[in-house]
Length: 93
View 1 (cartoon, rainbow, N blue to C red):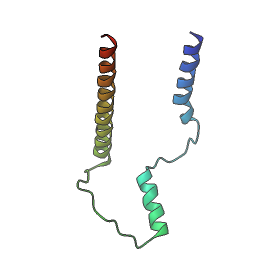
View 2: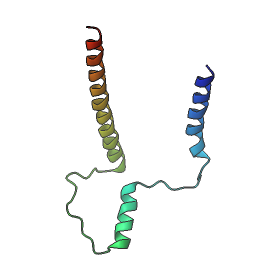
View 3: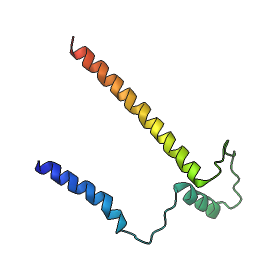
């Protein structure tokens, strides 16, 4: 019981703490940071290829990114569950 309460308090702290740290900070993705660094390091650099599909807005891009992550997580947990079920099946023999 005590361990559960400590873990719950830690989770709550992890959720609330970012609101107070770096309050005026700006959120930026790693793609933008990489592009800025490349432009500063090699201003004449040209990308090797262009994206196959460019989403119409940032919201659609976020949706597709979330969907991709959800599908990946579903595949990983399906495989883990499948092998765990197989292991339990052999243990019952």
